Amino acid sequence: MKGFSFRLQRLLRVRELEEQTARERWALQERETQAARTQAEAARQAKRDVWQELRSKADRPLQRLALEQTLPGLDQRLQSCRERLDAAQQRAESERRAWVQERARVQSLERLKERDAMQFRVDALQRENAILDEVASGREARKAAADSADENQRGDEQ
Image (cartoon, rainbow, N blue to C red):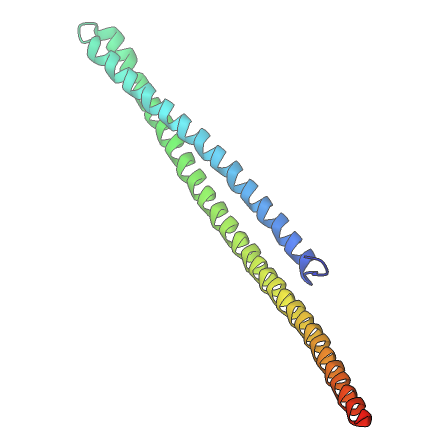
């Protein structure tokens, strides 16, 4: 649209960059959350594997004892992984909320820009209509003057 310039374009650009940064921080935190989730699942699987081996070694007391001694360490590892996962999920949610807030700020400026652009189009159409009305009224005035001159000429000829 020729001639339209949004008066807050620089602010909109700054807000867009802030929104992009917030989205990237959220994405990074989501990747960290996924890594923590993978570690927690690996810890759960390791504990399941030990329990399965314990069941299969019912007739070997020494091997059972060795496996049973690994369980407290696996429990601690699993608890630690769960805590890291919970913390990562909380950080990810916090970053998501920050991104949503930044996105809302950008959208409000985009709506304002669209309203300004619409008003610019309306004003341009009104100016164009005024010019067309002026041209049309000038044409009518010239025609009326010509008609009047023709009548005067006919009256003079009679």
